Length: 213
Image 1 (cartoon, one colour):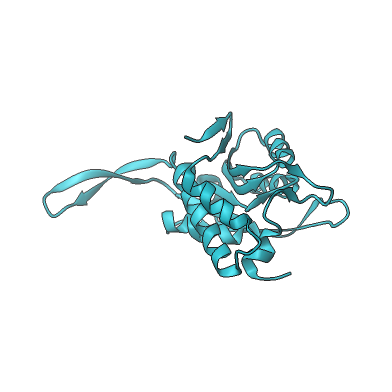
Image 2: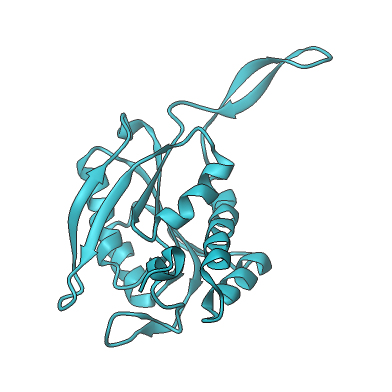
């Protein structure tokens, strides 16, 4: 059973926890790391998308014609925070292949650890879509807050945020800045260190997904 608090769901499913443990291992290579990020995103997405709106449509089966539910309206937008958030996109698209994909580019100031935007491209009409923002790590919360700010400024309303690992500091900051969004966390870690890295964490998710240093 998952642990929930207000607008936050922290997953306890054994498959998710097992895969996160392999992610943490410094011996896990790029190929396996990348695949695990996608798998975890898909497992989390299965629960996060349980409230997608449905409408009945007419379908002809081999036996007869019937009314049966399908996802309604403009469906979804997946919006990764570049660059690490890209690693989670295919996991969500495996569930909803018709979803559109936007991108938000942020970089973190090495001194202040605060985010700065360098790119924002969202599918239209964004206000009619369920928007899933992805970032494997919710550390200080600065990038997450900024990304949701940008989406709201462009008209986005129904927003969900998905992170595989979160620090209490970042989760608190995101909840306080955006109490109206749904937040989904694979595991809530202990704390941030002096360099704003999550402990015990899994290192730099972007470097481990893309094989860079």
